[in-house]
Amino acid sequence: MIYTHHRAIIDIGSNSVRINIVGVSEEGHFMLVDQARERTRISSGMGEDKIIRPEAIERLLDTLHSFRQIMQVYKVKEVRALATAAIRQAKNQQEVLETVERETRLLLEVVSDREEATLGFLGSVNSLNEKDALLVDLGGASTEFVLMRNRRLLHLGSIAFGAVTLSEKFLHDKEAAKNFINEKFVEFPWLKEAEGLPIIALGGSIRTLAKIDQIRSNWPLDSLHGYCVSRENTAKYLDEISRATGARIRRIRGVSSSRADILRIGIVPFEVLFEMLKSPIVRISLQGIREGVFYRDYLHRNGREEVLDDVASFSASNLQKRLGVNVTHASYIEWLLLELYENLEEKKDGRERELLQMAARLHDIGMGIDYFSHHQHGLYLTLNAGLLGFYDEERMFIALLIGLHRSRRLGRFSQPYSHWLGKEKMERIEKLGVLLALAERLDRTESGTVVSVRVRGDELQVQLKNSYRRNLLEGSIEEQRLPFASKYSKNIVLL
Figure (cartoon, rainbow, N blue to C red):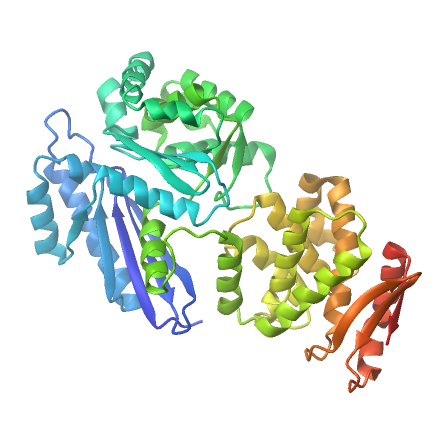
């Protein structure tokens, strides 16, 4: 897919500088086409006088020059470069801004702590389906936190310490760091309202917990976005990190070498909140302020509110357009699949129904790669092409349904996921997969030939349009008769 417009969002953080380049088509769908990160540690050595050091400015300039080269490749016309906590707090802020503009021709926007928290919220809320949570963004020189209720921002706060600055202030004295941070959080009494809520976590230090968890559990998916770490495991990893000193922390698998020196003290703001709130889970968000900037701008340009009510539908629609899905056919399969579900399933479940809807909408997303094995490509793309609004196990469920829509058995393709879903869900997927396969074959000519379906005794009666010549359809459903009868004890009758 060639995108005609490219937008760049640069986030100048205290520990790292990152860039997202997003391609937007004439039709309005979008895709992250490039991303880069450089560790600059511009807050390193700021100390109590809050001065960004010349060597840190040089590291920043080197990185921004590299990013300009990337932007030239994509012919980027729109750039937003955001400076967060380190530059926000710096007494030589104006010098840094003028130097960057002179050397790179980039105008930096210094965002307030409230705006940083809001953008982090927008990035996360528009890519996850949580309704109520405390969002915690642990950066290098600040920590932002947002109380979300019913997907709306209720309260926000910020403290001017993050993983880098806290580590420099307290070195190895973790107890002193915890006492210091506890005193900071006392200034936000509304945090008590978040007790017992999940935490949505942003920031590399907290992501480390999820990386450790995925490695130790042999998790089959690569993505961290939306990944959930249990309360028990979060507490265990925090304790392990707390006890690790010196080189021992580097030996913990999942801890990156670039973060090992600041992790033990740097993770304290999150650790204090986690203990204070008794959160049942920690869910990782990879989408933060850069994505928040994009979502706000994109949704406003398209006349929509800046918080999506239905992340899954928005994401699926974007995927359909990106991957060239015949939306008319997909919508018809969705209707037909749900009609079969309502008529044939005695026990219905609302969330299961939503997973079926999504499988129908995306069942052909692999067609752009290959016709004959597009069900296998569809399985992979559902798991890896950025479908948002579902938890990992739900995406596995959808993907395996798609993998079955042209195949009776998943075989080796299901092996990485069947362990996590369990025998009962796998049996459920195999049964519902028969319905998706039948729905697809009943629209073999993609012309909407089925008028209605109904169950009469041991028959599934399929009413066709009067003008339809059914010979192709009879052949198409022939191989589905036996698996359908074995799962639902019904004969398919075309009327």
